[in-house]
Length: 109
Image (cartoon, rainbow, N blue to C red; front, side):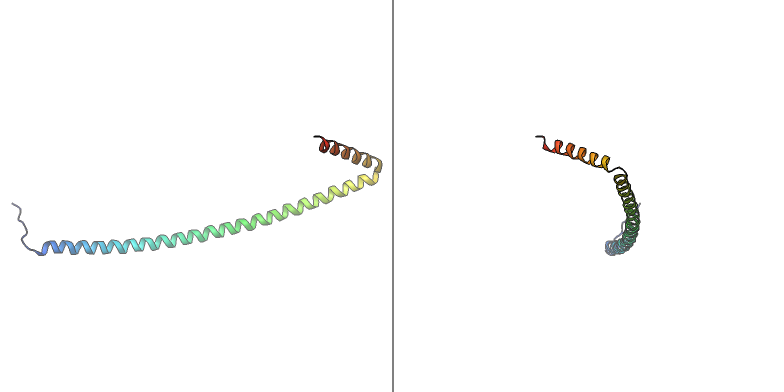
């Protein structure tokens, strides 16, 4: 038959062991929290760096596109000016026609 423990120290030993285990668990949880916090910080720092790098690349690309568009607009303006110089009567006729159409479209109610 199994023998029953008759000493009063046994429940106290169990309580002490549980208290130790709880303290160990608390310490482990604190260490896990610290590790996760560090991981979150490094992930945040990496994401901020990627975002800044991407923003800088987009800014540079945007500036290049803007400069290209400006050059293209200047070329088109120069071509228009050359066309007006070569054929002034046609340019005046086109301007009158466009003005008439715009006036007609905006004047309708």
